[in-house]
Every structure is written in structure tokens, then in C-alpha cells.
Image 1 (tube, rainbow, N blue to C red):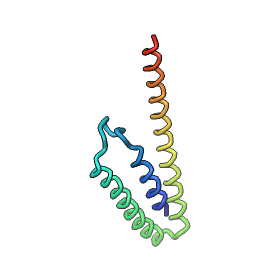
Image 2 (tube, helix red, strand yellow; image 1 turned 90 degrees about the vertical axis):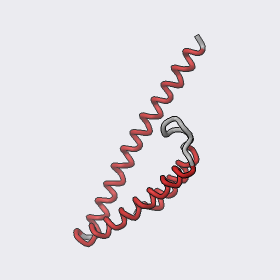
Image 3 (spheres, one colour; image 1 turned 135 degrees about the vertical axis):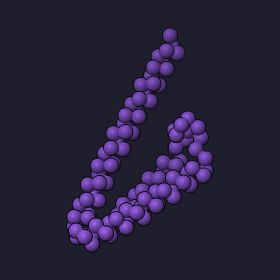
Image 4 (cartoon, rainbow, N blue to C red; image 1 turned 30 degrees about the horizontal axis):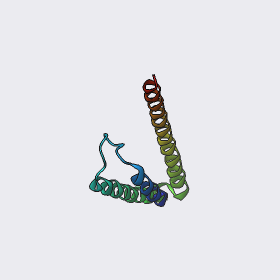
Length: 100
């Protein structure tokens, strides 16, 4: 249901990923693995959505996937906000100590 959103988001993330994972540059192989895992997750999600629709009906399956999408997006948003605030705090701390 949301697989195209994931593809669009991952392409933007790979451009700006840089050295955010462990302080070293992400290799092309790792970027390929990230993209492949995203597609594999979409495949698994599609299979689970089909099974859920068959068992419980289409409407509950759509509700469940929507709630799951919103809750995971909210968790990632909180994580990104926390990470951004931490970096901003570190940046300000480093600049204030350099100016003394």
C-alpha cells in the first residue's frame, strides 16, 4: 500500500546518508543492500496484507496497515527530532567552546 512512498524516501535518504552509520562512509554495496531490504520489506508486507485481507476482510486490513504506518512514522519522527536536537546541541557546544 505504501511501497512507492518507501521507494521515494529511500532514494532521498541514500543521497544524504553520508557517514551517519558508524562514523564511516557508506559503501555502494551497503546502499544496494538498504534498497533491496526496502523492496523485500514491501514484498513481505504485500503477502501479509493479502493473508490479513483473506482472513479478516479488506477494511480491517487497511485500518491495521494505516495504524501501523502512522505509528512507525511517528516513532521515526521522534527519533529524527531527538537526533537533530542532539546534533544541534553538540554543534552549539563546540562553537561556544571554540570562541572562548
